Length: 309
Ligand SMILES: [Zn+2]
Image (cartoon, rainbow, N blue to C red; front, side):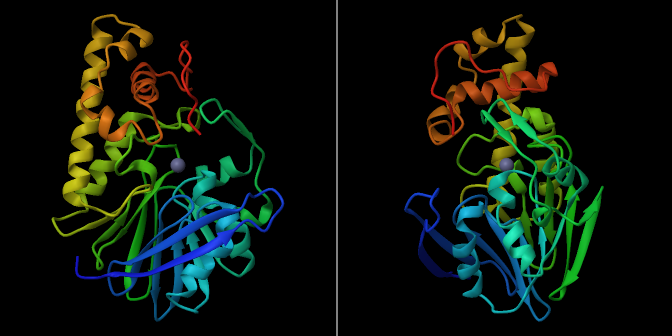
């Protein structure tokens, strides 16, 4: 990787009454002449900056928008013309309303707009999320794919169905050789499968395989969460998903129920490395089991277990 970490911006967030004195550090990585990855408060952001201006892939959680914009301004003062949302989760669309007010056109898959305009009830997140304000909504929606022809490169968003949610897209920058994988890829932690929003572990594998088919050995991969990755990292992640699914499947074939399968620890070999940060091994096994059994909701374990945030 020939480019350096170009800047680190540290900002205190939390002027609003509801936000605590929350400090979010933004780190920006230059991946090509025009493409950047930005980490901070929420999902990883992709940025294209060049002669035609700026556009973003996702915009983190709402309370960090001011800091996010300050970090983007370290790259360029040009107007933000577009935002592509990879999926509807609040940690990827939080800046939509503010940045949209500034003139950015919000682009997203049809299912993202559908979910953002209706109440979303999540068993896993233990939340009921009201519809978003009109100003936060995508106004240009697509079904299969959409391309942006800006900054000397054609970037394409491909809808990848029923993996993390039913509305994710991965975004390919062929000239820069960069892919933003949405939350189909959690690098360094167990992935979240939003079963109530049409997610399935099987679709996640399909999405990763599409990403790999667009990659070569030099491709830089922006995961939805976690550090920048290589295509070799993404291959290892795909192989881990496939192996974990096979382990759970073989226990289902032995007629074990979900609780028995969780107790059998079918993901033991990865639990230490991936299961301590957010999604627990029991939750991850539940995502796999329910995906394989066609149960379109998260089913909390019957034994007491800390609830993920
Ligand atoms: Zn997500």
